[in-house]
Image 1: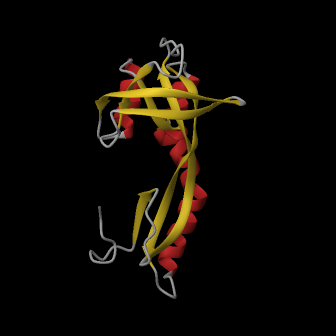
Image 2 (image 1 turned 30 degrees about the vertical axis):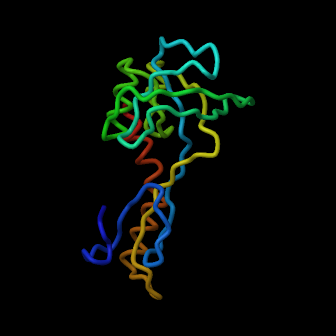
Length: 166
């Protein structure tokens, strides 16, 4: 975790940042979190049957999640069986058949299009936001404003073309 002010950085990019009175910024990308599964994995027969989850390092061992699937809401019980340090590694493990994963749409879109994974639904009331943050000052430098404008204008298409390669 970089301390923007103490270490002298102009801008830091964070996912779902906590409120900080010393930092201000701009959200440049929002995305849904999907529960995705290997293409050949059958859905559980009911909400109580646990499904093997490949997750980030801080995921609880057992969790119940609400999903929006089309126009209906349902629940699924997830049991963490593998923890990985990176969302890209989670994506690759799901594609390889290790279990289901909770991933941003932007990271899994290409694999969905190619039929390598299936979309079991969007997590209820959970999204990710990518923010560019800078020190809160009355006047923001032109360099920071230009960078924030660039991120807001160019990053969504860059993210789609680069991160969706998996």
